Length: 379
Ligand code: CAA
Ligand code: FAD
Image 1 (spheres, rainbow, N blue to C red):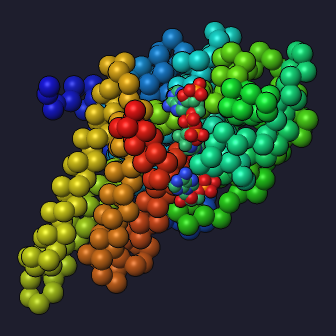
Image 2: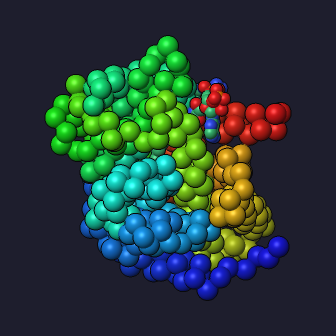
């Protein structure tokens, strides 16, 4: 066992850090305020290979490992989680799902443009009445012989308006329960597919979250991923890796807030000395540093297991559960360390605090991660 990164991993981390400082930081407050999608920044991230970080070069990706992905997600999320969520969804839900389970034709047609950053994708599992209870799919994909007829509504879809390729989970055979669910590749512009208005959110306000409506959308049979009835397992297996991405996002939000709080504590003076000289502040920083390091190790452990082809579902659930709780706690304390300045937008920590909250909700709430972990512990 060793705790050192390779040169390549360090290079990715530095590239992500530079990108976050030079390209994401300028305008991040305004994008948050006006709910503006970071379109230019996503285009550049695509050109630099961040949208297909773990995809094989054969399919237009960068061929990096999951450890590099964690390092990149941490750095990008220190500054702008509205951008990093696009990196996470495209890499670990959309590209991974296609590369691992897609046919060669699907990879050539859909994965190559997604992994090379020409376009980005969306992963569509949640519905108005099926969030945590993901097997309760109401969207139907009726088998019509050479195509599926897709009807229903998906909720809260990240990249809902800006994506070009959508992986949609839907029920084909209700009698078979979760074994009657399929995953279909749907293209923007297919007749009958409409995008609802953008959600007005508490956090990650720049990210593009929409409901999607499908009315008699004809999806060719060749767009089904895997065997008939594989859709629910497809979603669950894909989410195992997705949760590493969101865990690393939470880690980045926490470490971004910690860096800001530490710098501020050294600068701000009360009672004739920097607030960093007050033990109450020192202890807050000590707790933050310790918890962030623990979260980082859980993220890296899950990534290492994935890279080494070992089971990583429970580890990714632990990383997401812990890192998202640390993100929430750390950002609240970072605002506290900033006093009144922390409550205004220019100091960045209030945005990080609002952004932290979503990491406890999407890709499975904290309660769902506990279900995944406890089932593993008790099996
Ligand atoms: N890998 C493979 N198969 C799995 C699996 C996994 N990780 N987890 C479950 N399965 C299989 C089970 O083995 C079972 O199959 P069999 O009957 O053949 O054994 C089947 O799936 C059903 O499993 P469960 O009985 O465990 O199903 P459940 O109804 O109890 O639900 C759950 C399990 C873990 C709670 C699941 O519903 C879940 O993960 N819910 C949360 C949904 C979620 O994370 N949504 C995220 C949406 S994407 C998103 O949010 C993106 C974003 O924000 C950016
Ligand atoms: P519910 O499932 O209704 O849960 C409500 C509460 O009950 C939660 O606290 C939950 O933890 C708790 N709860 C539920 N069941 C149990 C239980 N058995 N035991 C204990 N507690 C329980 N989904 C996608 O498919 N694709 C996306 O790209 C996507 N992006 C999103 C982006 C944003 C900004 C948001 C807000 C959501 C996004 N989601 C996406 C949806 C997200 O995954 C769901 O919101 C989440 O899974 C929770 O589902 P729900 O909102 O229906 O809450």
